[in-house]
Length: 572
Image 1 (cartoon, one colour):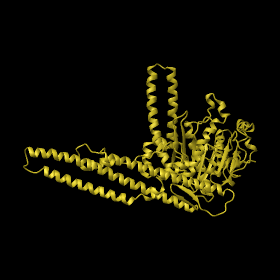
Image 2 (cartoon, one colour):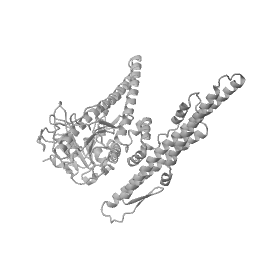
Image 3 (cartoon, one colour):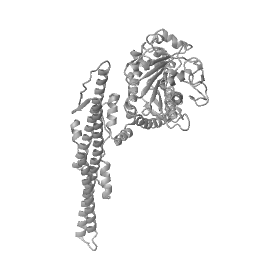
Image 4 (cartoon, one colour):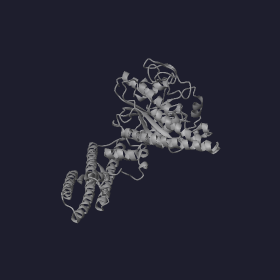
């Protein structure tokens, strides 16, 4: 199929077919009523009556089968009309977007740039990027059209072959509804869907009718929840389904291991498996607890819901990403990447810190003319961090874990840019990297994340394999470094070039971590240890508020996220 086929699809004819099939079903009901009336003729007895009764039952069965077939055909036509209508609307929007960009889309599809303007600097690259994105969207519509066509053909073949029948001796209405239930369009499939780019997934997902989106979420939650390019709300629903199922599964496995361990009188191998399974369950419960946290600024804050954007229980460690606030609706979005020894059990602490950063950022916005601008802060444990406590300290000295995580992180940040409700030039996306996470974040920026990221802050950083903002794909003045002088081991690693050239010799803007009164007239503590950069000053009270403010380093993170970098304290 191509775009011409989508144009030529006649939804009015499909709607007319639905009405015609429903009318035919009414005729079947009338015929059945007449047969039943004849069969119940008073005083008719004997062999003739018996034979007639058998004949009427046979005809009734045939009518039931016809009712089932009519139900299937009617529902198929209705769903196809709805799906095609949405497809046509998506194609109309695509052509309008192309026209706005001085481009034209032709079947099967191709995209032509018809602009007559002279282009300089980055303009040719940006126009080619726009052209490619339009092409991806057009191809996604063709994929969806082919899926609808294949589904329709499959159901029609079943109807013609008599495979949609109603063998039970029930009412015609039951037969009709039974046929309808067996004629739904299937959840759309796309070979190697998990290998597609965020741009391809975004275009494909937007082309799907809402009913098929819900079907995909219900049938494939583990896939949809982790597809970069799917909107945050859909990912959250899918991942919560997958989390509940995985928790139930691990609880059952743990109970079975407990029984086996007791029966085997404590075998060492079983004890090891038991400990690993308990650890896995602890991680799952930590994610669930984080999702139920209260991250509001106050009781009037309605935008502090938690969203589970990533949930991958397979692999060495469970991976998860939790957003505080919907990142698709937020004007300001941050993603924080952690360093060594971070695992699923850490998601509670990270999400709490994300909530505090959001509160602090909203406070800055409210006092600087940005009240009403939404903020979302994401805690991203989407990679296997180096585990220096597991007898493998060399993992933190190499870049293997960072490179593996950078690929996933680049796709994740591009997804946030694609699914945002805000135009690309209005969304403000910040990538924060702590410790080894700064190395991962830097490699992600160099691997494509810079397309949507506006600012980056590296803190407690051992090195980032870059010493200029341009190497990260960012403009000068949009890359920041924040290392406390007392963070000795990290600073030693940075100065020795463990992860590239010394970041202190870079053109990154260096921010303060020292105790001081910040621009909002709040006296804040400095950083005393490697883990304090994003934490509040006290262990009690709501972090990120006037009663329990973030440290100077946390305030700096909030100022950058709020788009108020002039408020951040520079290092002296």
